[in-house]
Image (cartoon, rainbow, N blue to C red; front, side, top):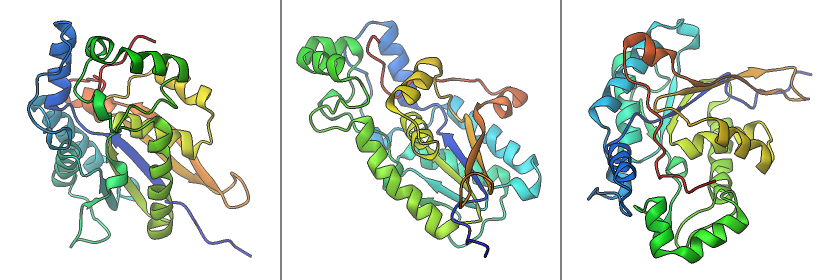
Length: 258
């Protein structure tokens, strides 16, 4: 008996385009400043002009790939930079979405990792203002360290498991595009590929998730008794390079020394 499909046929996971926050954090790091100079809440940080170019370039790429590979469902983090990225992709790709009345869905479980009391601080700022948290993080590692009022990578993974189950339930057999954040991209990989802490942190050490970089999974019916998603690309930035859009990969929060 044929088992019902429980996965999307294709799952694209894309980090948002470069944001004004990324630019501000670059400036703070260059100045060795303790605080990132940006007035808005993290949720409200918009795309930079470069981020808009990146999102437009990715939209053109989705427009030009074969119709049977184009996403039909687009789901975004509710953060402004992610919604703007998804909106520009939809506008330029002219996708044949499954529900034209709701071309863009949002899901708060796809939001950026919350940094709690460390929000807006650079590594210098954390060391200066919260040295005890820097010490705890050094002991526990970034995967398990939860700053007061914030989340660990494990916390992000727990909420993403629910989001992935929703995608499986509502969009099995569909081609789905998720627009989110760098840590969220990596945590999706951890879940889908059944990684260990060591596996995902090794990838994190080797790769900065690029703004508008594409991670793609395709359904493989031979992978296990009910099939599974198989990784076919990670951090794919050719759509940006082909159109001359800058490739950027600034972390959403500066990394403390490894």
